[in-house]
Each structure stands twice: as C-alpha cells, then as structure tokens.
Length: 140
Image (cartoon, rainbow, N blue to C red):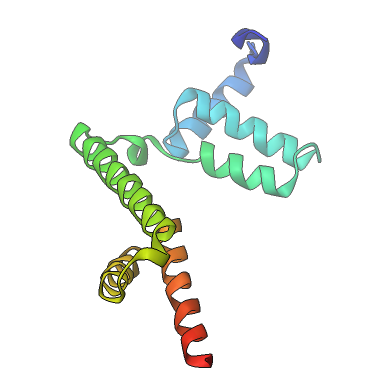
C-alpha cells in the first residue's frame, strides 16, 4: 500500500472551515491535529471507534503546540537518557543470565543498584530474582 492510500483531502465549506480554525486556535493545535481530533471525536460519537482507541487518539491529537515544542538540548538530553536506560537494562539482563555464577557480595551490589532503577524491566526482574533466592534460603 502506498502512503497516499491512507490520506484524505477534505474540502470544507466556510462554516466547517471556521469551526476547524476555532478548534485549532482554542486548543493551540496544528492544522492536521485539529482535523484529526475532530475526526476522532466524530467517529467515537458515532460508535465507530472503541473507547480504548478513542482515548489513545484523543491524547495523541490533543497535544498543543506549546507542549510539543521541545528545544534541541531537551531532545539530546532525552535521547541520552533513553540510551543510558537501554544500556542499564541490557546490563541487568546480563546479570540475570550470570546470576548463579556470581558471588554473594556481587549479587548484593547489583540488586542494590537495580533498586535505584525499578522503572526498567530487567532491574525489576533482578530484584524479584534476588527476593526469590532469599525466600528459598530462609525456607531451607
């Protein structure tokens, strides 16, 4: 499928155009987001869009231009942070793979570090693994 297969070109009469411009101005949206938000609201009201999909699209197309404008330094900071999170997540995954071969003091160090990053998937798994091991040791 070509990209154009999913596009619509709409020709609005004066009243619809002015209403769309008012929506755009009131919510501080781009022209395309204002049109898409109006479309999403209409499809949901008519029953053609599920509540879950409606919430996703409504949140996506309701972001104002003020919130959308991000400085290049913020973008760089965000990308650096995401790269660091990917690196840490990969590190915790490797620790989990080597868990049985690690000394107790090394395990303690990694678990302590993982508790600082519980927003990461493998950090949570590492902490859970350590808790399971502690439970097994106390039950024996």
